[in-house]
Length: 58
Length: 379
Image (cartoon, rainbow over all chains, first blue to last red; front, side, top):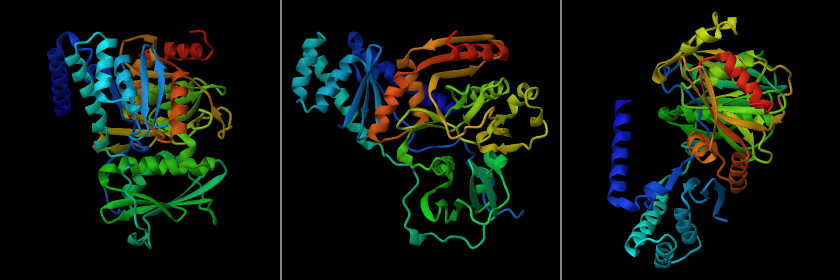
């Protein structure tokens, strides 16, 4: 979680720096003017990734 | 047509067919991309932007360059469902399976053979309430087993895909998708999308509840279910491509341990229900079978609203309209939306025709009252 937060903070700083650099034209930057959205590549469930793989006899 | 466009507020939405990506754009950015898609030269676009938006030529050139670079970089993304195509001859179907379960859904019988305890644990629990005696001739046969490092899904003898362990949630999603198709005699191309949401209906219309994992959408729908609404689907909400209607899916509601206390009064059976731990997702759940007040499970329902829900202690209840350009970026990344143009077009029209709300609450009674009013346009 911490790593993810740091990545987001870093990303925000980079965007912030980019917008600051653009100055009064900050709104005319790709970062400010475009939100890119990627839908999921396939249907996904909220599922465990490791619940004890392998054969377990009943 | 290699793109679709719609207006939302003072912005534009573009869908790029080649990449199956959606963009929410300020008008100036839309202007650049549209001209580029129409084949205009970059210099001409820059000159137009400079003049139209009163930008120095150098800034217009920079702006156009940034946008064009961003669009070009889209081709770096791979589009695929992470279920690799498989040569049938490379699959060894086991002679023996760990278990065979029979599910009865909509008068159809499904035999599912699980190759291991893990694969059964991954997929069976949410369908356990549908279990029935094995029949001689099932309508559909599913087989899920290990093939080397990867898990394989076969449906009626046809290989659907294979997935590495880290993509188990895609295997689970595809398993549900194949079940959905068999239930309604459809194929994947017939669906507009599948949403990571919970859906309830009042037998005439329905609502979708969305939010991050742990936001309370399943718990919210369980409370609504106890208050007389039908649960249509939990976690996996299918929407029809030709009508935009929301269809039911019979998976049980997964109730997190933290929500048991608040739901036990409504559903006393939860107290004795088996508990299943999913350490990799850091959660423990019990399963609550969906309750249908009247059974017409083959019907789809038009969607009245999308409600972005957040359970927050001691917050009372607030519900506010959410602008579409704010709701759209919340919806898309967590959803599978069909990459077929007709379905993408249907999705855009479907979304823009629905009201969106932000619901924050801790008071169940007030929340139920608000949802009832929302259904009857009394909010």
